[in-house]
Image (tube, rainbow, N blue to C red; front, side, top):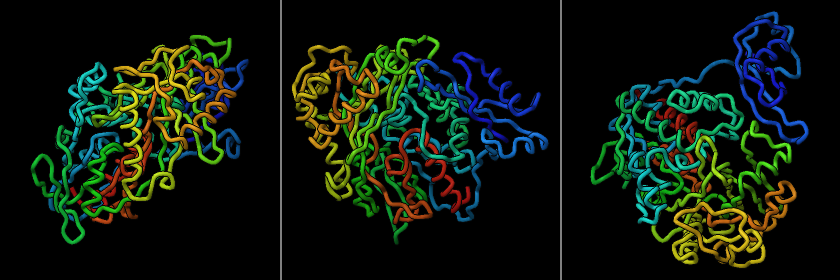
Length: 518
């Protein structure tokens, strides 16, 4: 296969026209060809266009003709496929703890290969989980085991469903194909910045769970991993819901918020360490102000809703994260007496507001080197936010934040966080090492996008669950120091987002299959 890139066309050009243009550029009348990636190039406001690449199966003559051309890249058209290499019999179940993207794809891969995995998920099934999240947003009690962080689909379910990733791995396309097969929009296969949206993602997750069960796997909701049993440095069992389950392999895809599980694993002798992560607050603008900041006065409904990714590094890094066009700021705590924020969008991204985290890097040098010190650092912020906001989320306008005042006067956007916000001095909620850098970053971002210069935009705090503050050590065989435990995904410190977590889940399933037969 040859990828022809740099095909620039007007906004609104149909995919068939783009493919035809690529074939003409290759000097071919017809061939097996499809859109590889397509994105919007809005760097020049007077010349906004689509930039596409097309994958073509070229014949020998075309290969020779295209050899060495700068706009052509050769690629292997070999789809990923898991392989069973293991010969050892597993004495006990193959268990997957956690049913977020990492655990889900690990379990699906194992089930497809005949391993009949047992999935333990501390939260509830999708329907029950949606009810619990909406109840909390409406002012009800938080369910500490079923919320935005815990339950079927993991934390990524209540997000924008972004599939963008920095990793370059052939398994990424396989993940996209599986998601599309289970109901995700087909556009995720070609868009350079694909997303599914919470409303579509819930159905995809249900479909994958049903597939795992149809293949002989078992999924137990409301069932937390309570402990592990070991003998001579090897896993022999896991305990959950009062039951001891003989287990030879545990894929620990517990997510970044399973703080009690990290503590349990550390107490059981699993090696882990504190790692860097980032904290800050959610900023909300109107989506129209974001669109006009990106496109200027030539904004047209044909153009997609605007999204951005900004960063500034001078010493400590500050950057935007998980930008949700047309989205909502979500109440994302997993424990009572905490306030946590996150962002969510539907597939249509048709809400009035846009939101994004503005976060600052923190490291063990800031909070301590004990494996759980990062967790304690984040938890202290979350509890302080709860106390300062008296149960509501602390918030302020950008102008008030820059001046260390508590005020929501002069808002140019209506905050979307439910059950509600309370004006606070955010420098009393977040550490000064964070707020000082946020202030500097907002000044830099305002010079890049006009909407960031709006003093009436709203900041809602805190954003603390950006990634795991812990890394569970794993060796070249992908196992921890206790053999049979396979740390996995974002919670274990090896992924950041839906796509990379899913890829890591598949790789850990492969590591299990490298040792054990079905």
